[in-house]
Amino acid sequence: MKVVGITSCPSGVAHTYMAAEALKLAGQKLGIEVLIETQGGAGVENQLKQKDIDEAACVILVNDVALEGIERFKGKKVLKMGVSDLIKKSDAVMKKIQDTFQ
Picture: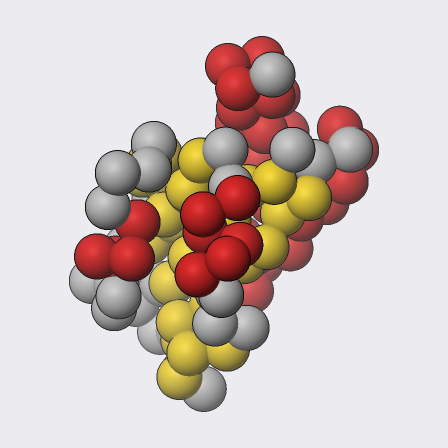
Protein backbone atom coordinates (compact mmCIF):
# COMPACT_ATOMS: atom_id res chain seq x y z
CA MET A 1 0.00 0.00 0.00
CA LYS A 2 1.16 3.51 -0.80
CA VAL A 3 0.07 6.80 0.78
CA VAL A 4 1.13 10.25 -0.43
CA GLY A 5 0.74 13.63 1.19
CA ILE A 6 1.84 17.20 1.73
CA THR A 7 2.89 18.84 4.99
CA SER A 8 3.11 22.58 5.60
CA CYS A 9 3.06 24.85 8.66
CA PRO A 10 2.89 28.66 9.03
CA SER A 11 6.64 29.14 9.52
CA GLY A 12 7.44 26.38 7.05
CA VAL A 13 10.25 24.97 9.12
CA ALA A 14 10.16 22.59 12.09
CA HIS A 15 6.58 21.35 12.18
CA THR A 16 6.46 20.81 8.41
CA TYR A 17 9.32 18.33 8.67
CA MET A 18 8.18 16.86 12.01
CA ALA A 19 4.80 15.99 10.50
CA ALA A 20 6.43 14.45 7.41
CA GLU A 21 8.74 12.34 9.57
CA ALA A 22 5.88 11.25 11.86
CA LEU A 23 3.89 10.00 8.86
CA LYS A 24 6.86 8.15 7.38
CA LEU A 25 7.71 6.45 10.69
CA ALA A 26 4.09 5.49 11.37
CA GLY A 27 3.79 4.05 7.86
CA GLN A 28 7.05 2.15 8.21
CA LYS A 29 5.75 0.41 11.35
CA LEU A 30 2.78 -0.90 9.35
CA GLY A 31 4.59 -1.68 6.11
CA ILE A 32 2.97 1.24 4.26
CA GLU A 33 5.03 3.19 1.73
CA VAL A 34 4.63 6.88 2.58
CA LEU A 35 5.80 9.65 0.23
CA ILE A 36 5.56 13.20 1.55
CA GLU A 37 6.05 16.49 -0.24
CA THR A 38 6.97 19.37 2.05
CA GLN A 39 5.99 22.95 1.36
CA GLY A 40 7.97 25.09 3.73
CA GLY A 41 10.51 27.83 4.13
CA ALA A 42 12.76 26.17 1.55
CA GLY A 43 9.92 25.97 -0.97
CA VAL A 44 8.55 22.70 -2.34
CA GLU A 45 10.76 19.70 -1.57
CA ASN A 46 10.30 16.06 -2.58
CA GLN A 47 7.58 17.03 -5.06
CA LEU A 48 5.22 14.12 -5.62
CA LYS A 49 5.23 12.45 -9.01
CA GLN A 50 1.89 11.93 -10.74
CA LYS A 51 2.62 8.19 -10.95
CA ASP A 52 2.91 7.99 -7.14
CA ILE A 53 -0.29 9.99 -6.69
CA ASP A 54 -2.13 7.68 -9.08
CA GLU A 55 -0.88 4.57 -7.23
CA ALA A 56 -1.71 5.89 -3.75
CA ALA A 57 -4.61 4.49 -1.73
CA CYS A 58 -5.21 7.98 -0.33
CA VAL A 59 -3.72 11.44 0.15
CA ILE A 60 -2.96 13.13 3.49
CA LEU A 61 -2.90 16.93 3.54
CA VAL A 62 -1.34 18.13 6.78
CA ASN A 63 -1.37 21.89 6.86
CA ASP A 64 -2.11 25.02 8.83
CA VAL A 65 -1.61 27.25 5.76
CA ALA A 66 -2.73 27.11 2.13
CA LEU A 67 -1.12 24.41 -0.02
CA GLU A 68 0.01 24.64 -3.62
CA GLY A 69 -0.96 22.09 -6.26
CA ILE A 70 -3.82 20.28 -4.55
CA GLU A 71 -5.65 19.97 -7.88
CA ARG A 72 -3.30 17.02 -8.55
CA PHE A 73 -5.38 14.97 -6.11
CA LYS A 74 -8.73 15.31 -7.87
CA GLY A 75 -10.65 12.04 -7.62
CA LYS A 76 -8.50 10.68 -4.75
CA LYS A 77 -9.64 10.04 -1.18
CA VAL A 78 -8.16 12.93 0.83
CA LEU A 79 -7.64 13.20 4.59
CA LYS A 80 -7.03 16.72 5.92
CA MET A 81 -5.48 17.43 9.32
CA GLY A 82 -3.72 20.16 11.23
CA VAL A 83 0.01 19.79 11.79
CA SER A 84 0.02 19.55 15.60
CA ASP A 85 -2.89 17.10 15.62
CA LEU A 86 -1.16 14.82 13.11
CA ILE A 87 2.13 14.80 14.99
CA LYS A 88 0.30 13.59 18.12
CA LYS A 89 -1.84 11.00 16.29
CA SER A 90 0.29 9.77 13.38
CA ASP A 91 0.26 6.11 14.43
CA ALA A 92 -3.53 6.06 14.83
CA VAL A 93 -4.02 7.87 11.52
CA MET A 94 -1.88 5.38 9.60
CA LYS A 95 -3.61 2.43 11.29
CA LYS A 96 -7.00 3.86 10.30
CA ILE A 97 -5.79 4.27 6.71
CA GLN A 98 -4.52 0.70 6.68
CA ASP A 99 -7.82 -0.64 8.07
CA THR A 100 -9.85 1.42 5.59
CA PHE A 101 -7.94 0.74 2.37
CA GLN A 102 -6.69 -2.85 2.75
